[in-house]
Image 1 (cartoon, rainbow, N blue to C red):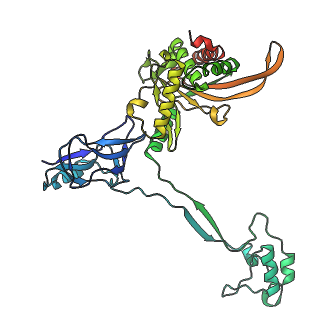
Image 2 (image 1 turned 45 degrees about the horizontal axis):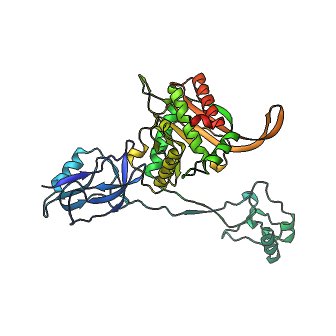
Length: 409
């Protein structure tokens, strides 16, 4: 008996999937465990595993097509099985949806050309046949100056434009003196599944959670010295971001309200510390999670973050890699951004924005000396976190970063 295979929900935020590639074709004999297709979700490209034994009788969405979760994508059964009733039942019971077999088309640049309207049309000298009366010399001068003859009133016989008319003409301010056509060019690119979900979730976060922001300046001199020493012995290169991750993890243990979530009728205060690290990829942003971050060394954190970063760029992250965050860090310091605010990554109550380390003059012991400063900005959900709680957390993070040895004891 034929069985329907539907698009599974491969992540907690997935609403649609895009068929990147079919690995089987109609008529193939398949068994449980075979890979039917590669599916692009909002987070990654994942393999769709078959769970039915039989012959692939029907494919309901073409390569490149988008299909909603739970919609039919294939039918498997015995050779010769009549599956038309399955399709009719599916169509009659499902709510109207987009055509799942619609092929995704790469948009080409669109060029639109429009004829430019005559400038100063009341003075334009155009005959009934739309030909402009002008002397050859007047035409040559107008062409050299870039003037539109339609904009010049003629003073010769019958309104003919002569040399003096062109030389005495003053183009209208703000108008275009040039003749011919104007064109505009642009690309229209289909929105990826990842970008759709990013837009949806960030809009929900920004407009549902009352954000407020706290910024603190951190002296990074000792951290720079400590990192230099550690990297002489560490098998994995430790970054400043790893320092920030570790400092936040230890501070979250001290300030559990920052490690919380708003659940509507209650606040969940998490006892575990799972820090999400925002990673930029081609289509948007992914946030893999370093679990139990407070219990891990700097080298362990560094190794995990590097592995996640590569998996994110290769679209190899799995749902278990990005689920369960209790706090998030977004670092744009490597791009030279000194300070910014980030939108909270729900269900977290806070997200930390990390800026670049700046070499600036600072005052120490009454003397102006060279220094290295870094700005941290904490975005807080005011339903969960108050200003004093956020400030205390940032002070704790600063203490760990300014005295890195405290992170090792």
